[in-house]
Amino acid sequence: MPAVGRGFIERLEPPDFDNSHWTESVPLRNSKIAIVSTAAVSNRGDRPFSWLARDYRVIGKNDRDLVMTHVAVEYDRTAWQQDLNTIIPLDRLIEMEKDKEIGSVADNHYTFMGAADPRDMEKSALEVSKKMKMEAVDTVFLVPV
Amino acid sequence: MCGLAQIFESQGFSTVLVGFVKEHMEIIKPPRALWLNFPMGRPMGKPNDPEFQKKVIRVAFELLQKSPGPVLEDFPEIIPVKEGRMSYALPVDLVYKVNQLGDIDKLTDEVNKELSNLMPDYLKAIDINGRTTVGASEMKISDFVPYISEFAKGNKPKSPRKGLPAIPLLKLVVEDLNAVYTETRIYRDKIDNFEILGKWFWEETNAGKLLLAIEAVSLESDDQVLRQIASMSLLTPRFWSEGPLPGISGSGWT
Image 1 (spheres, rainbow over the protein chains, first blue to last red):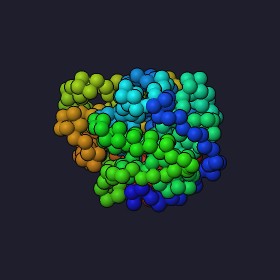
Image 2 (cartoon, rainbow over the protein chains, first blue to last red):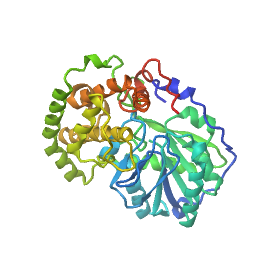
Image 3 (cartoon, one colour):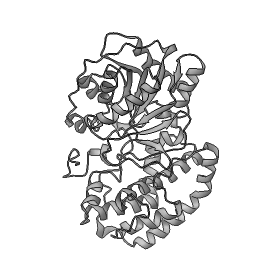
Image 4 (cartoon, rainbow over the protein chains, first blue to last red):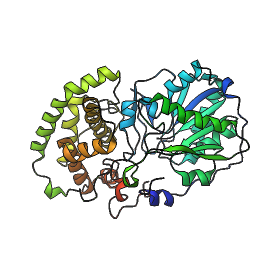
């Protein structure tokens, strides 16, 4: 954590989550992987995320025409302007699937607004879980912005 | 992010996350986590560098083979940042008062000329990249400056977008305008340096000056939402300089 901003982050009260859950991993070569991002990215034309959004958007494996409606402006946005994979590495996972490093890439991936309290996202996260189960996802790769 | 990992793990998925805030990762203890000492906004590290990006993914995925958890490891490479900054931030003394703003119509004309001069390279950038991130506002680029300059004059124009009020739309237009400029400069000058791009946009362009004028007007506005988004640094990148503007609680957003 860089020094500047540390004070603010340290003052935030982290949510008290049950951290006893543990799911044994499927071997990577057989694992279907979905990305969950908190970058508040969505397909062009989707409803923008509100400032403390608790909901989510779905991004297809081949969707690349995306826009960002994250409430925060203090982090770098020039990296994703250059390359979507800097924040949502779909092309990299597809390459790893072709190279048989991973089993497969899910057809659907999910984005949230990272600014909201994760406890308030639980309902949405359970909905996403149902969708991922329908698609037989094994592993979730969580990527912030 | 750490909390979401706990929820997904409880639902029978194995999870692995990458993250920037090690303090939170240590407290929340997600099942498998890789700490990145990178600037925020770059979780895969480097744009257009597939090998580096895959290295981050591979190191993260190696954690899936470890048991029992929670597992927290550091990515072995650091992407340095300037003076501990997570991204570009405005100089703390670059804050305008309304009585310092001058002629907004003249400034608006200058921004329009500046934008027109950028457009040929912006269009080439889209052609080369095959995409643009501009468009969250769903307004035409030619409508950006007229819309936001109304706020700089102390007015609150009606939102042209159904279902999205004027101030949330203002925020998206501000970000879209910023993105037109930075995407153009990245293409034109082959720059991947957010400090250079941020300094140029916010401190050297007329567009940056117009947005600082909106911030000044917003801070003195009777409109609570406008005042709040300006004071919380949701229009301008101030947060990581010295925290939010003086007298404002960064955690006070409701």
